[in-house]
Amino acid sequence: YQQIYIKEGDITDPSNKWVVLDEHPDSMNDGCFFTRMTTATPTYIDLPGTMHNNACGYGFADGHSEIKKWNHEMKSVINFSRSWAPKGAGAKADWLWHQERSSAPRR
Image (cartoon, rainbow, N blue to C red; front, side, top):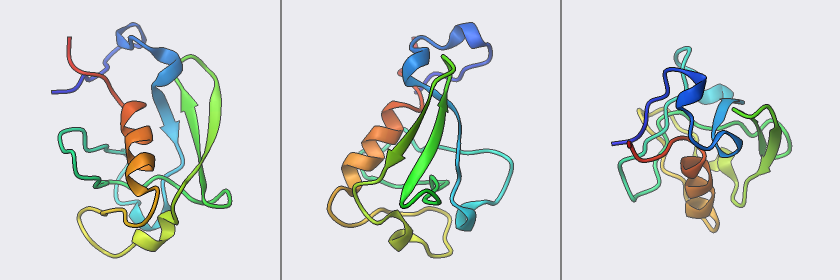
């Protein structure tokens, strides 16, 4: 199971954990952004944004921000579903990059 952060002090690696990001408009379905952490197969519950030339803005717990340029065409995975499976070259690397910055193993 992955760490769930209740307080700011719970975040063990704040320069490597995002707190806000751009969500893709086609996957907006609630007020939260969920990241699937328990599978080795790349699937998104909510899809990161692509509004910045196929890139997404991330705000991290230490206060810095980054624009992540996707290695694959993130928009090509959109279809109405309960989850999105990225496809194409670079898809797994992008998913792992996002997953590693979402949470850490529970202590």
